[in-house]
Image 1: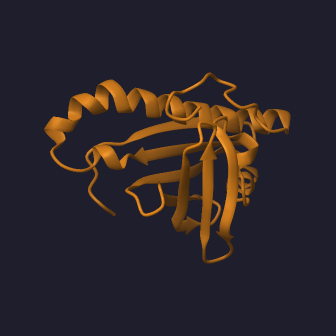
Image 2: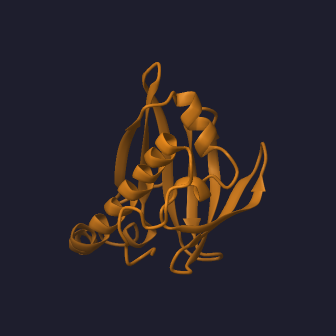
Length: 166
């Protein structure tokens, strides 16, 4: 694993089993169901060895996600970024809370804040990047929670707009 200067994470609990949560987040094109800033989540490849997809945000930005570590029923690690561009590292981890209750934590290591001197990056990270990404992660996980409760796709921008993604 690389050395990262900064990361942002958010954890949310769900009233479903960890098995059901895994089924949702490991399904092809899963972001189409619950990601509130996702316009399209298209598969590039999704099989036992390769998990690679394309995420188009509501604002037209297109990023590719390439899963680099698949941990059956527990989560995965992925790199996300523009094609041939810099990549951020993201971890998705499921944990059991009880028989029919689980939690998911998403942790992002943004590429722009993990290069160079920590001292120079500290203020921009704390004042700008961290609040935006924290709000983003909350919206994604709240979208997943909404989807598990209502069993229909989460409406776009359901928890408010974000300049980077809406």
